[in-house]
Image (cartoon, rainbow over the protein chains, first blue to last red):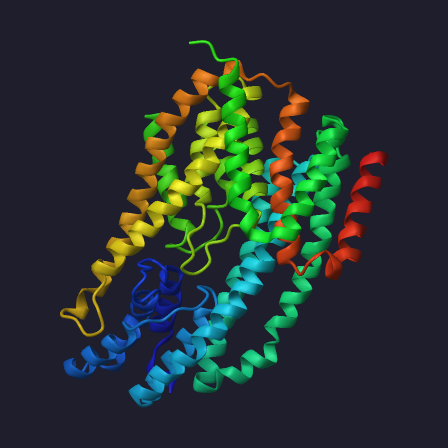
Length: 250
Length: 217
């Protein structure tokens, strides 16, 4: 049981989880970061036998990947499994089974919904004239309230559930949360686009041609998706470079 | 001294991108505001940071994908844009930020390849060197960010000082040009949020609120 692991060891593992992507690489992805977070617990659990400790460290150095925040679910659960003395093959199988879902759920919830929603809220506040010293710290506070809560929830849920953490994950209905946050982000995107179109310093003041072009650009982005982003960036850079050098006199 | 400070800021903020915490101080909005505050050009920092944020709304540090690095891009863009009159310096700063974001993405990929050599393998010798290798990789990432920022700021300031005064567009057209580019990102984001059909009621409600609010205020 996790009673073997003191609060201090668990706190150390949790703190180290913030560095889980520190040595991200194409071979083991966050495998080495996961082992780094496990290290204080492994040192306590296997302190009496160097050979067992070596084997435990090696099995956590293997390939692993998940969303960095939700990796805490796996971290907590694996800490519990190791403390319970479960077989190494079961620990390995568990890690293989959860990495896909934890990556997919986390990417959709955090990168695909939470971050854009909070970013849009901050940009809209700035456009409304809220001072930067309010909007920027507010962005960081709100974003990280969700971020740290998710990491903490994941760690505690994993630690409590152990290998049965899948049930807790299912009950948490993260996909439903993702959908709700995406809806809010949809509303905020509308607010932001409305401000850009009609707000002070927006496209209405730039002229109808720019407003029509922006609507066409929005439609293009919506239809083509991510593949249009890089060509757009290239086009903007090229346009700025051409305009700036047009009237340049050495 | 100023270059050293800005480079250090770039290095620290780059760490937040992936390696340490991901508290999102590396987002262009925050990185731009911090750089502007550090250099005494808060308005330029905010303008360039917010513009880059709008462009990079759909760029996230997700998995093994190569993505534009927002932190060093924003620091370079703001530090460069502060070197001349904002009318020409802001679009040039934004363009530099977009270019530097891509270069930052390449350096992140290169570091990840290097990390594969650095960290001990499960079936290799000396797994106990893990802590040193892991913390070493983090230090390298910080160094990468600082060097990338230093090179970008030196080159970027030269570009802005040379070209900003010949910027031919007025404030309205400049704003229009930059917002058209940002509108593509907004469209891409709409798609990734589920698409217009699925979000149209909330999207149009938000838009109507903004338009009515803008008319009333």
